[in-house]
Amino acid sequence: ELLKPNQQPTINKKPSNHHHHRHHGSYQDPEKVSPIHQEEVMSLVSRFKDMDVDSKGSITKQEAITALSSGRNKSAGKPVGIPGKKNRVIVQGSNSNIQHGILPDELSAFTSHINSSLAGDSDIGDRLPLPTTTFQIFDEARDGLILCKLINDCVPDTIDERVLNKPSAKTNHKPINNFQMTENNNIVISSAKAIGCSVVNVGASDIIDGREHLILGLIWQIIRRGLLSKIDIKLHPELYRLLDEGETLDEFLRLPPDQILLRWFNYHLKAAKWSRRVKNFSKDICDSENYTVLLNQLMPDHCSRGPLQQTNIEQRAEEVLQNAEKIGCRKFLTSKSILAGNPKLNLAFVANLFNTYPGLEALEESERPVIEDFDAEGEREARVFTLWLNSLNVDPGVYNLFEDLKDGTVILQAFDKVIPGCVTWRRVSRPKEEQELSRFKCVENTNYAVELGQANRMTLVGVQGADIVDGTKTLVLGLVWQLMRKSVIATLASLSKGNREVTDSDMIRWANDRVRGAGKHSSMRSFKDSTLRTGHFYLDLLDALKPGYVDYSLVYPGKDEDECTLNNKLAISIARKAGALIFVVPEDLVEVLPRLGLTFIAALMALAPL
Image (tube, rainbow, N blue to C red; front, side):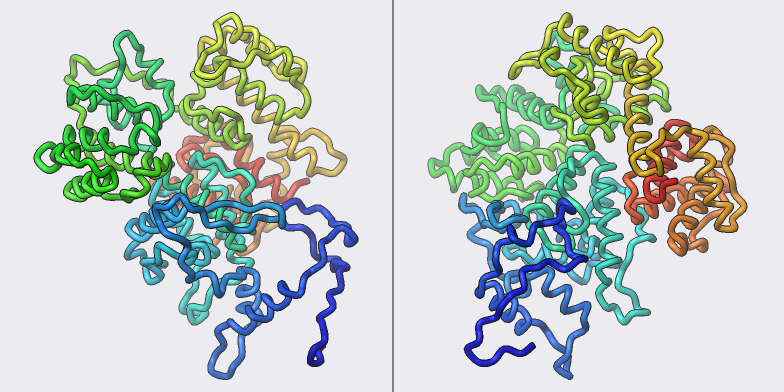
């Protein structure tokens, strides 16, 4: 109804039946919902006024919804503060009492990285470069395309881009609708988890709503993952040079990548006969002296130690960045963010330096360490189990499955997440800051984990806590697999009628019934069935669950390994588009690894249970 002049708008506080709270799905008592104030209504009115209309002065319903739900027609282009100052731009959280800070330096650095990494992309290149001092990145991220492209740039081939929803010539390049955005953002969230990002409390709707602090946090996780993925002894055997005296390779490989980077930084400071060392990416770096020496040690012909003579520390930081520019590494940092000691931006700068100029002599054949190359199946399973444990938000995060479970605290946290309340925490020893638990305490903890497994009907014949402490691979894999399987079964049971436990044969029967019911002819006999390698059964099952999702013109006959890999890559991306959480990579399915195939079928079953 139109308001008469001077009439105050009245708002009906009763929520409509279809509206529920986006984040928790919980019903809110209308009496407890805070009243809507006049300024909020006026803000809504001003947003209507701000909308871009066509020549007839009209706007489509979808465009109106999009403009109102993003609520940023005005703020998208506004500058966000002065980069380098410690000022944070405050953005509103999901409820009126929560606010989150965004550092302009981080926003600027990450937007610049996206601009340079994705420039010229056939789908989104025309949107770039994005301004680095406004919130426009958050509006541009809403349809999921920039985030999907960023994931593929950081960890190539994670997403099959053929399944992404994009504006097309058919629709006159109109923006995609909210449903299509949700599908793209399902792919973003599931793929980010699958490359090892910690994605907690972020859903597709948060990205569509342009929630600034959540999107920026996700962008950082993806960029960080890409930068640190190359700090790997299999890619760089010369990292062996960083071992301390008396340190074993096993002990060194236990370090997370950011600690290996600090070790690398200090290796070069020591080689330069410099007296200082760095223990962090913040205060130890903010006077720029250590950066000056590192750059000089890596590229002495281009980077002098001249900045050490500069007494003005902001000017010294600028001279360091000028040196970095000479060798093509001026990225992520400004002189002010060096002074501020921003740990994310310093980590990104140092990781980019390592990836460009590691400065470590290649190993001679005689000194190559025995970098243990254990069986590929164990390695593939370890990768999936590591991602799964991290998705439970265990603390500390897991990098090396066999090393990081040794003291029992992570596996006990996982037990408590899968079977809530099963762990009596007063029985558990926790390591103190910067200290490791004694072997005796580790064995106590891991014995308790084995005891919990047996009490919950896991098959752990002959497994003892000491086997976990010793990192016996087959036994560690066996224990974690049974816990992951229990988690999968519990999820499926909670979704099924009657809450009954689902067996392997139930899953196989369900999958075959769905495929047959859709009039398709593929089938599976077991999780070891070699015909699964082509990916055809998985694609048929997906098309049965989500008719029309599979474009069969993209499916290969599966005559060789490459064709099978492409089919399985397609299946994984379609499953993520449908909202499934998938940790496997195509090679796991091509090699028909039974445990990993089961997790894939179970994730599809969770979309459409018995």
